[in-house]
Length: 144
Image 1 (cartoon, one colour):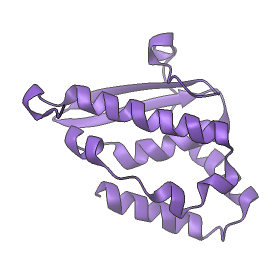
Image 2 (spheres, helix red, strand yellow):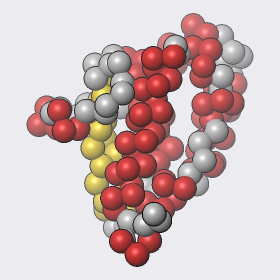
Image 3 (tube, helix red, strand yellow):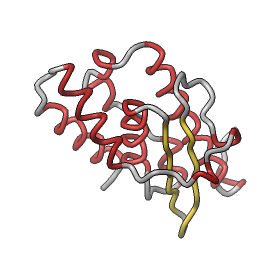
C-alpha cells in the first residue's frame, strides 16, 4: 500500500466510530496495545523523541532500501499515535517518507480527541521519523 492508501484506510476505520471521542480514544489505545514492545536496550535517551510530553522511544532501520520503524511509549494513547505513524511509514523508501504529505490526522478529527500537548508531540514524532528517513537517503538525493 502507498502512504496515501494507508492514510485513507485509517480515515475509513475512524469514520466507523462516527466522531465519537471516547470510542476514538479507546480505538487508539487498542492500536497501541498491538504495537510490539520495544526491547529495553532501545529505551535510552538517544532514542527519545524530543517534544513529547510522554516518553516515546523511536528507532529506524533500513532493510533492502526500505525504512522500518519500531517504537514504544509509556502512555497508551501516545503508543497508539506512534503506531499509526509506523503503519503509514513502514516499508517505504526514504524519499517517500521525507516527501509524504500527511493528511489523515485532520480527516479523522484527531484534534478533537488529543490535546495540544499531544498534538505537539505527534508533530515531533513525524519530524523525527522524517529525519531518520532523510539519514538513509543517499547523499546525492538529499535536498538542502
